[in-house]
Length: 452
Ligand code: 4AD
Ligand code: MG
Image (cartoon, rainbow, N blue to C red):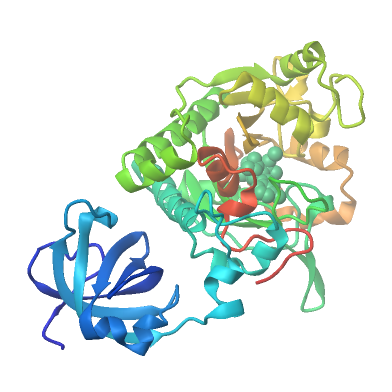
């Protein structure tokens, strides 16, 4: 029985050779004297035919989905008129079960019922499905999204490499905030107050004088106190910082990164076919993206009669809330670089625009279906200006002191620089047309959920 080539499911190829493959039972179909089993290993599937004595063994007669087994046998093309993945099947002559899956109430099919119409997982009770996310991850949609996620991370790294931008890994445990105190996760750090990082930006900035342009793909944490379809407590943040640039360079860079990542993904047949299946009308975005200033967006929202969350017409200075932003983006239907937000609704480190000091050199990238996927800006690099910015933002003297390391960047040779952060889950939700970012992450964390 060991006289067989061990092959990875999906690569067994040649007809006539005896092979040994392993996988998990995807489906079982019994037909008179025959048992057809489709084995699954990652995204590959192989039909295995059990006949004769093998089809009468207890294990095969009671075989359940998700059981893990090894099969030995010869490959052949399926007889014409029959259907099987890739039109081939394995004629099994021996098998071994490594792990059985239960039958009845505890069976995989009972715990994860398939919609008889679509053959997809029924998602009518999301919370219950997130409780068994470890099992849901085995299903088609979840595994496709995990595959796209893996490919997307690789693609970002590839693009940064093409641009000669170095990867860094800033700390996750910090004592200063980057994006406002209201979403900080605080914890006790050997008797001192500390936080889970909201963004690696400030740390990346400190690396510019040593490493030059740099990026990181690290977790960021936000204590978001509401449940929305695009907010997680823990998310993967793709962030980059670029030295000696102007605002227009930053905008061009962000467009390039997004378009190039999409090109790399669409050049991979397996990934392309997932995207096309999940998002049939997807078209890679064309450069240049539409550019819109915040002030124009406010006018647009007023003209369209889209109100603020408080039910009032938008005024210059208002934050554009999630609902209004998404309505605008969906209506426009293509990526938007929304720029020049007023200082008071943005972070302390964003510099005023020289031409109109009411607004900052800031940008959000908005995508149909999701809204904001990127937030970026130029950074204040003058010492006096950053001190004034801390004060304007209401930092206490003690808090200002805790930013000594960030302030020192301005003391020791400030340079015009800027950067951005992209939420990977939102990027994938847009690309694969998912209603919520929860589906695009392995084990979503949001208010009320920290398991499994
Ligand atoms: O707009 P944000 O808050 O910007 C920053 O954190 C900057 N310091 C980034 C930088 O310039 N390096 O967040 C950036 C992006 C958002 O556009 C969004 O895609 C994502 O991070 N994001 C979230 N994704 C999921 N859940 C959340 N709670 C998120 N908060 C932000
Ligand atoms: Mg933002």
